[in-house]
Amino acid sequence: MAFLDVEYSLTGRTWEGPGPEVERLGLAMAQQTGLPEPLCRVMARLGVSADGAEKYLRPQLRDLLPDPRSMRDMEVATRRFLAAVKRREKIAVFGDYDVDGGSSAALLLVWLRAMGREATLYIPDRIDEGYGPNVPAMQALARDHDLIICVDCGTLSFEPIAAAQGADVIVLDHHMGLETLPDCVAVVNPNRQDESGDLAHLCAAGVVFLMLVEAGRQLREEGAKGPDLMGLLDLVALATVADVAPLIGVNRALVRQGLAIMARRERPGLVALCDVSRMDTAPTSYSLGFVLGPRVNAGGRVGQADLGARLLACADPHEARALADRLDGYNTERREIEAAVRAAAMEQAEGRGLELPLVWAAGDGWHPGVVGIVASRLKEATNRPSVVIGFADGEGKGSGRSVNGVDLGASIHKLTQEGLLLKGGGHKMAAGLTVSQEQLEPAMARLSELLERQGAGAGGPRALRIDSPIMPGAATPELIEQLESAGPYGAGAPGPRFALPSCKITFAKRVGESHLRLTVSDGMGGRLQGICFGAYDTDLGTRLENHNGAPFHLAGRLELNHWQGRTSVQLRLEDAAPASEG
Image (tube, rainbow, N blue to C red; front, side, top):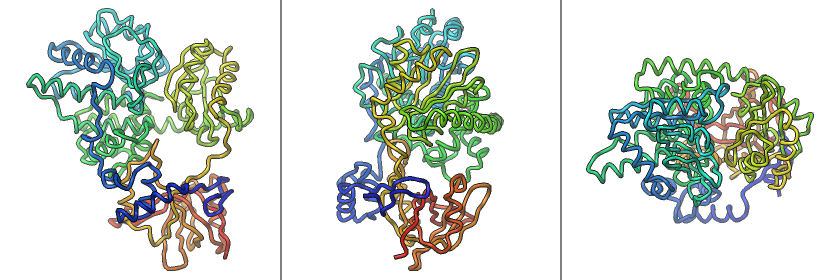
């Protein structure tokens, strides 16, 4: 039965409430702990028991941090890394051009700088070189360096790593591996075929951080001391959220602690990035994923590939501000390019059909730096795995995004093995590929077939998940703070969403181009301010603005709004449905 009997909302979705078991566990937890029932329902949905509730609300990194040596090759990789540090060897860090790659590289650069060492940073150009190590770059780095560390890449780079003659290579990665690995000193990757999968949720920065934890352990065993690692967690948090790694287990503790570190405003690069982004409140997982992350990514997408990593590793505030300004400008350019490609891709995908197991689009001249973002937009709009490909000179470079329960990376690997793709790699939720013009149609047909076998396309529009009903008067700042203590929220741990039953709209006004600001009342003295971003992109805004006094069920997320020194609760409205007058 649909939650509040909403089977077709104003945005065309069914509302889905918690199952009976979650309701039962949430109520029992509230009775046993004395915590608010809305909070307990959220924790029950996240798999928290009543006995573990208090500990869950106060996660300790020391309790959740895995032993780095549980990953294969970790000890040998760390020993080789520390040997290079002690012998003052020349070290190069080869990173990916996204947030995870930039953060991973910055972790090593900052750690080495604290040890009195410098390293060469190399980030490949997305258009000229593509993803990961390439033969010319690795040959050039090997001529001038003793050790090359590949971060957030390298697991499938057999030929480029073999070309690094004269230098040792370490790979610190998290992308899916094959049964064979490159011939190098070490490949530390929780997604190797011979790993247990217990740490498969780590992003590359998490892997790098664990190597630095192991480095600290090995240094202590020798009577030496390494740099402070807790101060590096802001970089790990940024990468974890921006790479859409699930916020479960140690990831949740890393992000939570990293947000606290970031709030101290001690890293010049992140301070400059927050300032240029006009962030005037403490960072949240939302700001990492949707405010800071896109700006760090912008250099790799449409500008200079190494700007993000350089900013994150920067120690000089003036240089950091200059780099942040450049990235902010590139981000504006990226948005303009993205909008044009998104419109063309959606039109093409609609013509092909949005009910298929795979939604895809391809076009000549589509900028490779935005195809991943556009694929995400198509996925969100259709609840289907999506692939977007930009062609140049007969070769297409594309990016895909998947939905829960459908492993896109494995299917891309299979297509590569079958010869339908020139290159391909990734993980469950995201993948990249290179395809020839001739193989485009058969490759997409085969991919659609593989994804359909996993259940892609079986569902209609994504249902809107509701955690609990709540009345406007119960939405207090104290409740919001308690809900935040059960976070951070993100991939793998969706944030709480509440439904306000049968509310009257007492004020509604269009703001900006497409947003709606409103005030709602429950008729018993409880009132709540709300904002609905993009309300007029659908008919949601028009229906609510012209409410004519009719009651509505409202659904959205509760947040604290800070304005002119005052703090109040605000509903970030996502959906609504007419309610009966009775």
